[in-house]
Image (cartoon, one colour):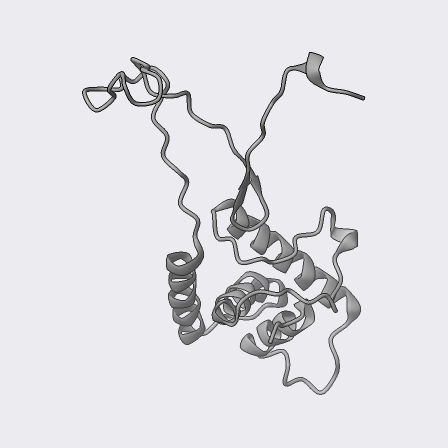
Length: 169
């Protein structure tokens, strides 16, 4: 079952000891934690950790009640690392157990979900002895590398450019 952004924030508050207070958190505190959560997930996405977290295009579009649709294996890494990021703002010190759990969960998350970039040879590299003239068409060099555009958590879009004169409007 998928968690909402609010559930991650509440669990992070619990990790740093703010959930046990008798009064509720203020809306500004939730908005601050939401911005930290979104920025942390954007950083992870840039590092190649693609888990399907819905990144907003700007901070005003993010909602606390939004379902994240991240796999359950990523939950601990998210809320423990969020707790480490928000704790100094509340004057809290994160326990060593939380730090260790955050590091282990993040390492496991990277091992499971990090997308490795595809290695492409340059178009100037000779094809070598394995490229025979009777296979397809003989090219003395390898084909030019693709320049894929990443789409979503793990996909690539291949673009086929056609001759502009053949397109009908």
